[in-house]
Image 1: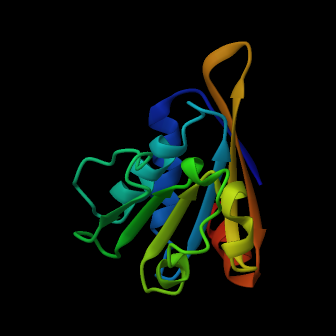
Image 2: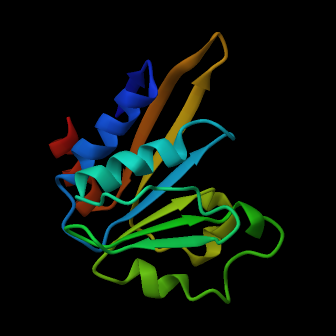
Length: 151
């Protein structure tokens, strides 16, 4: 599934809509260049989960936990793990929890990822700084159902 957005508000709205179908235990991978909108998408997920705290990129902390919504949200930015991977971080505890795990830059922890997840690739338009293309790929039946509900 592919969606084009023309501003940050539309990116947030798509994340918010997806959040309405989340039941807990989901893993959402967000990949894209710097400034592509990964954290903006996560803000929409948080809004849809009823989380009112300000969502910040966890670049320096690696993981931010938000538990004041319908489901806990675990927002991870693993960009700094490019050289080392995430084998010793206990990420599987988050992935196997009843919360929603969101991982930015997931290619850096490929070996730690389960086989089922929702991948969202965010691509910037080279001619329009506000325009993005969001490409959704479902890996597993649970995530195929999520995409059907998002359509």
